[in-house]
Length: 187
Image (cartoon, rainbow, N blue to C red; front, side, top):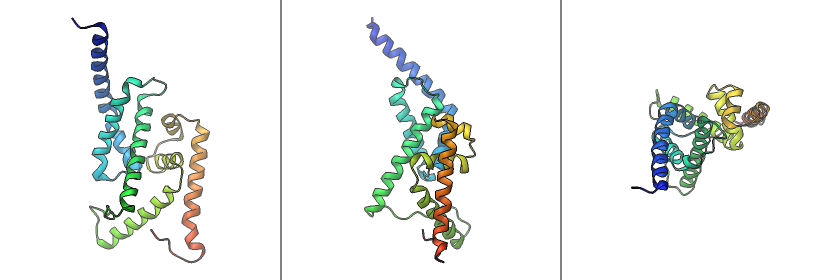
């Protein structure tokens, strides 16, 4: 017969596995969406989503229930995306990563324009705090309401709108800056 502690551990492990499976089914699509909004490239989404659920599995036993599972997964996804951006930046700085190119673009000129616009916006967003960037992306690109973002980020609604206002002001300021001296923005 197994010692009681082993039975509890095995029972907990089975419970955790069942819970993780339910979380995976319920939230995988949203995790992919969050990761995409946070700048994870399409070709990296599957691995990044996997990383989110591996991290969730590792920390499930320490989950205290102070937030919803959805909020907890959002936080993990945000950190996974931040880590991926940091690693990509290091690879670019070391010259190990080729510049991005769109996979399914209508034509070379349009693809270049889209790539440049994305690079400019990414540059503006990179200057924001992680909280401001997340709020901006969730609201402007993800279609989340302020209340949804407040719940996900576990902050007051006014904090969401303050971060959003600051992020918008920064993006507008940065986008107008190059035109003040008659120059076109560079990616």
